[in-house]
Image 1 (cartoon, rainbow, N blue to C red):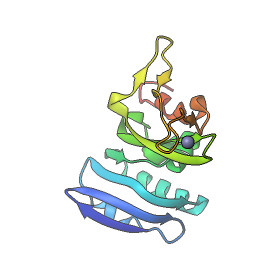
Image 2: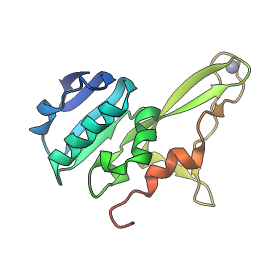
Image 3: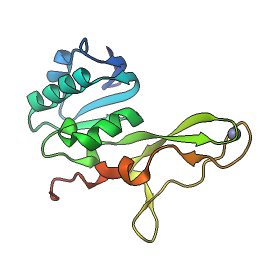
Image 4: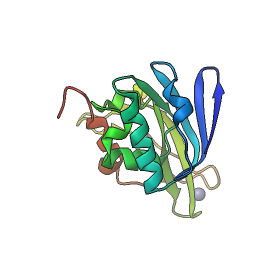
Length: 158
Ligand SMILES: [Zn+2]
């Protein structure tokens, strides 16, 4: 995993695995701005290292940008990854995967948490996604209720 600092944002790229080092992030500002969009893969040891890093930072705040679906899936299982108490509002933006049934292709769209829409029932409304190749509407490639579990992680909720 590589870390590049651009305009105060720490851009992580590559594999989040046993070789990932977060030491240089520990002394980072509060809030620490982290962009995860170039993380290609995540394994369980990488998750443990990430968790150890957030625990070591203690109550300092972070802002996570460009969270990959893989990262979100892990936060859904281990909310402590975004700090304790876990606060979903620290996930500033994330990618949602869609698939086109006719072209058999995947595409993901970046959503900003602050601009996320909800329908009358309070469910997340992601809008329509049209395949750039065939023009058909794309299907969500994840189970919506599972993917958005993290939205429930707020300090004033259990
Ligand atoms: Zn298509």
